[in-house]
Image (spheres, protein in one colour):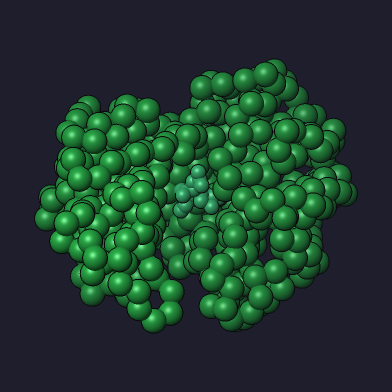
Amino acid sequence: MTNSLQMYLSENKSRQLDELVEWLRIPSISTEAAHKGDIMQAAEWLVNNMRTSGLDHVELIETDTHPLIYGDWLHAGAEQPTILIYGHYDVQPVDPLDLWETPPFEPTVRGDDLFARGASDDKGQTFIHVKAMEALLQTVGTLPVNVKFIIEGEEEAGGAALDAYLPNHTDKLAADLCLISDTGILSPTQPLITYGLRGMWSGEITVTGPTSDLHSGVYGGAVHNANQALAELLAALHNEEGHVMVPGFYDNVEELSMEERQEMARVPYGEAELKNGTGVPAAYGEADYTIVERAGSRPTLEINGMWGGYIGDGFKTVIPSQAHAKISCRLVPNQDPDRIGKLIGDHLQSLAPDTITVDIQERGGGSPAFVAPIDLPEIKAAARAYQRVFGIEPVFKREGGSIPVVVDFQKALGTPVVLLGFGLPDDNLHAPNEKFHLPLFYKGIETVIAFMEEMGGRGS
Ligand code: BES
Ligand code: MN
Ligand code: MN
């Protein structure tokens, strides 16, 4: 890195942070219709910022849902690779609001952390890329590689707009590599390369007993309680060891290679860290797999919500007519989301007693898992970039979370995908008090610059 670049970065730290804070003030919640205007405002804000940062052809692309944002800088020469940078400017809802120490859209610095909804997922991490380009263009005047940005406003809501846009704009988005900062590293000092993401299937179960709620004194004992029947069905989905009991669920799931298990064994995270980080009294799950393996490379079925009957103040002796559950699966390679949904539906129907009926609605938008080869040249370049900035080699692991568009990029554009994350395990993603560790905002900018230099053949 040149001296002038180094100087620029240190002199502009607080201004770049101020800009991020301004962007984070806009409550761009994609899943809530009331925030449609805020989404638009957040999109326009980024368009302006990308323009003043020196990117070309910056445009707001209207869609049926929320806008996409494009921008590029393509003057590195045809012999240099083109990197497509993806991120999302939408954020998750904020409830429960009363658990936030400071309001989610009043970004607040406490210690080294910036607290706000979207600080880490994913406005803060997306902004790293914009500010890395700005720093290079304002000092060196050029980038080591060609760059395109495609930023979406509904990742947290299923990503329909980008899904529809991608296959029809493969020329415009054509690139040699897709680069995404929407994952995390292990600690402020230990970088991590995420080389896999789990896929996803989700749906909703409704159990119906009587046509209307009943008095439990008049009918109790003679009709099957819908809450009880739902609990019985859900309880049958796992055995005591945490295996999913849906027949066919593990068909084609490949065992981890020795090499992968060895890589993941280097990740210094086990039961103690899990207990410490989550407050659980003990770890759960498949005994044959380590914690890192269970939460990153094994498929799961989770009950995300369940409700039915009376849950208000006091007490009501009722037999509910209906009970509901939202469930979702994290999927690994070779599990097809549609097939998994069908297996779950068939299994629940086969378990259902004749005292109730069961209905399963798929939520749609399921996505397959992603795994990249660890020895991909682009991943090696990412490892060198982390090493240069953090002074320590990254460890490698698969992440349990999902970024469905990753597989779509691979398919539509035929590019490898590199996940260059800067979040931390305790960033409180999707939860109250989401934060971004500010040293990683600044190191992120340096790492993106180092990665571009590595990709442009100018590693140093
Ligand atoms: N950035 C996350 C994915 C993620 C989660 C990466 C945890 C690293 C650690 C992304 O915004 C996200 O939340 N994805 C959703 C899926 C989406 C379809 C709602 C997820 O994983 O639940
Ligand atoms: Mn995200
Ligand atoms: Mn998210």
